[in-house]
Length: 307
Image (cartoon, rainbow, N blue to C red):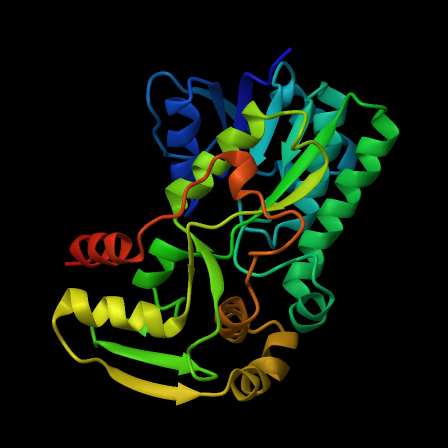
């Protein structure tokens, strides 16, 4: 039987709304897991499944029991909560197996490669993502074909990142920081494209089973992004040149101490200089039918939205 009944947790976050829209557009039967105190609203076609506010702080057995009840009858679970919520995802995975859910997609997504050893050394956050994936692999092996997983790594959220300085540009101040000369190619994905990729994974159930897949909307350099921004704004931007090695070293100690701003800065830089998916064995754009998107069109759209 195809994967049709899809649950999503984190539907009101940064990525969640795009995934929810894509699922509905693809005519899946969609349910949203939301806390009892949540004030979020969804289209009438979306079924809301209420979970206790404290479900993830309950004793393990009680938490799994509550989540199992919530997930029973679903074919797949898409997780779009923050990837830092590792223990929560482990509980969700165990509940999926107990509830008979066939597929789980964890909160891997952006911005860096959680299967890369240097990334794991540099960013403990991504060790958590790798831990979730190992747990899913173990569960799938033990399940004997009744449970599977797929993880998507998208690079930076491109349209979102343009507007929030994740891509080292400030739209309001017309400034940019360019690393290592600015000619390093990197992969990045628009939010709606990631949503589309999720639906294609579910529609191509067998070929995406138990796999880590890489996707992108654009394959670009910082200099190409800067040129597109200057063309779209009709202005010359103020540019600061820097070395990625120096930027990472500057924030490394604070990042290891858990400083959120330092972690975000390293993710930002590393996601620009070390996230080229083209040529990877599991680069999945062709398999998922994802077409290259226009850098100029995305830049123009984001600038319009940020007016």
